[in-house]
Amino acid sequence: MNKLPCSLNRVTSARIPTEEGEFRLCLYSNECDSKEHLALVMGEVSGKQNVLVRVHSECFTGDVLGSRRCDCGEQLARAIALIAEAGAGVLVYLRQEGRGIGLFNKLLAYNLQDSGLDTVDANLALGHEADERDYTIAAGILQDLGVKSVRLLTNNLLKVEALLQLGIPVAERVPLQTRANPDNVLYLQTKARRMNHLLNLNMLDLPPRNGHRPVGHS
Ligand SMILES: [Zn+2]
Image (spheres, rainbow, N blue to C red):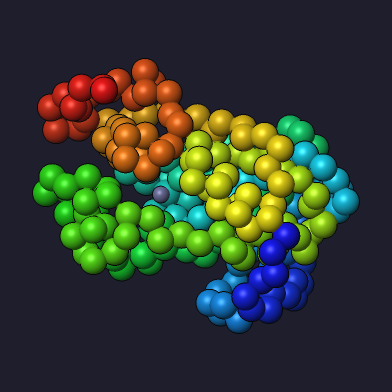
């Protein structure tokens, strides 16, 4: 893989038994952004090809609160379950909340969405990019863990491209389909239409909460 622009160190790890099985949580320090990025690892992944990997960006509202505005919490749980089912794999947990704009700006964006903007236009209205996530640290973590190639759990083609550009061989993309609900259907449709996410739009054919039908599929 390409050389990291800053130092990244696995500073500690600990055993984390979960309902899905036993994992090891590795905590990294780095000089790029000073955040505590994490890797939840099951089984032997060092030196292995085709390791099942999810690169998940932190979403407090979805991951912790189970917010129905997005599908993050469900994707996180599903990824952990699939890794456990495979018996080995890595969930990289990046601390880049709100597609990189932080929780404060994400909440501002939610209010704009409640007044009619979609998730992309809300970010743009706040002076941000639609997606400010960076996967450099994720690539560094996968390299540190000795993963040789990955089967990447994602619907996001840009994430596949980003990891490839960072020198991580992506052997396969494994879809991570979640269920739509009236609170996240417009969000999921926007991800599919404007952000290159491969989602099964037939599963998203639900009326949004305000009763208006979503814009017709193109
Ligand atoms: Zn989310």
